[in-house]
Image 1 (cartoon, one colour):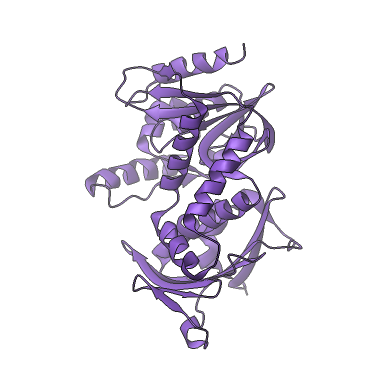
Image 2 (cartoon, helix red, strand yellow):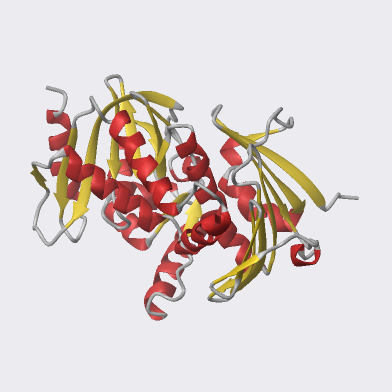
Length: 357
């Protein structure tokens, strides 16, 4: 008989180890996101544990809790909340954000399991890496023999389309959704590709490599997003090596340059001069928007009674980390047209090739 309760272990490079525990069906979405990093022996040190399923109400434990904004209950190094988003609802208890190991207890409906990854796991990963002077930046990243170039951008600017085109031309994959920055180096962050119909239109190779069922799901969910005026935003995800079977993944590379992509109403790709101070400000803004607003609220509430910590300090430290990491790295900004076309990639590729000189 198959055992329904599982504990699964994951290790992202040597920076972050974590575990998920719960029923098999409750873990399926989370384990899909981090399949590339799964290990089959328990790491000696876990930075994060997540227990999915029923858990005792911490308000009944006898511990003192402060009530913040009517729904957040803040104890010593702990936070309890009942929350919801669209059709998802859940209960959450976070304990030990200031300790060596963070413990999370989570119970919710099936829709909530899809949000746990974006609302909780990734923000805590970014918080922990930031404490270690590493920055998890919303960006795509490719590499070759000369090193890595990172492309930070807000959503729907063209970073994924450009990365796919470069990968089809032999570049190495470092990251698509995020890249981990360290001193003079980048580290990969391998998760499934989150694809829309416009990705298929801008990258014809995907129409040949992605299985028919996945293509159908991409078109259907893109239609659903438009038909519901943005309410039904359920992006279809395809494992990287399913979408691009011949891709080569590089775990790390030296950081050669940063190219910030910014969408505007220009008609063509337009490089522009930009002071590094201005680029740093924009990078922090991008990461702020990419941190699910729910977790920003959780941060604010958590630090309400935690001496010496605040959300502002977190972002200030990330800026200092970025400033130090990018101190000797050439940084550029490229204005991108509103609609991404093959000519967009051709011009961007020409600009990147000039960086070799």
